Image (cartoon, rainbow, N blue to C red):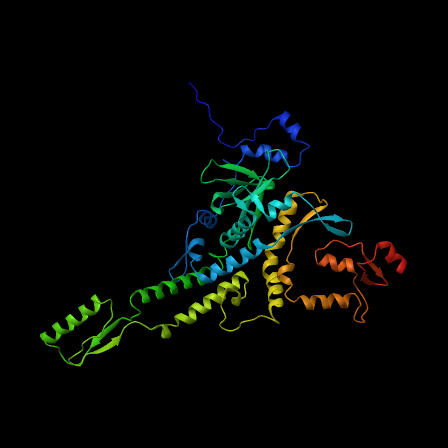
Length: 435
């Protein structure tokens, strides 16, 4: 009896009828054939990538084990990640419609899932915050587009995916994502069905974790300093010491000293020591000032804030400064421009290329005006100058200003010689007659 060798390589099983049916549906063919992929695909992970995926710890030179979970115990890391993730999650996501060179606010069905309810069990704020937090802590943030059927281009919601449940892999030139949920069977998603927000160092599949890569030593040092401080205070905030004397103690003096030490131990390390025979205390451990524990902890705060791009004062570190620039306005503008914008731009690009892959009339953009407008009077004075009301040459009209304020054009406003005026008490016909 001859044996038959089995082909253990993954084979794509396609249906000619199904393929013809899905040929005209954008992205449908890829989603239909992806189920057969992923089990034996030719993909490989480095040891670091596998360790990151499995949540393995990274040990710093201080001896502390650094993971995404232990890093959250450091107040500076927690403050930076909660600040960035919370700020992005609280920003409204506007959907706009292209109208030639103009843009108008669009009344689109997708607005609700981006700003109110992402999917069943996930409010939009919680979903965005989880997605950004995964990016900041693990290096990649993953989400899944929810469609009414595997062959539909329409999206009815989205949900974030836990980083350790997602395994990106390549099959030829295509990238797929194997999802292994905790409470269900594994399945494979096409790139079009996944929200992927990578970080610095992205290699096409995964990104290194900022916590265990750039912030490894800073967070490890902070964890060790916290542990050392905790042990110090748990011991009654007392230093290790020895008792020294130049003379020799007799048996009676030794018994008295032993009784005094036992009484102090039973009292929780408090109470006086009865020293006789010329005994003097000698400190063994280094005190906090000599060990520069406080300075080390302050330095790690600045290091962690530098990695996440957060000004230290925004997480409560006011050791050297209590403000930034000219005030609250510049604080908000700087934070949006140099920290949030590097996260907001890839989010908008990911949404636009996944929901509207061919350049269409719709696009999304975060509304950051609330964070950038700290001084209303200064902004309106600038608009007044732009309109030419202060004797300057006008270079903007009312519609351009309204567009910067995320407002649609107002037909009641007229432009005359480069300046704009509003006459709300007159009808459009009366305004034309008055001009």
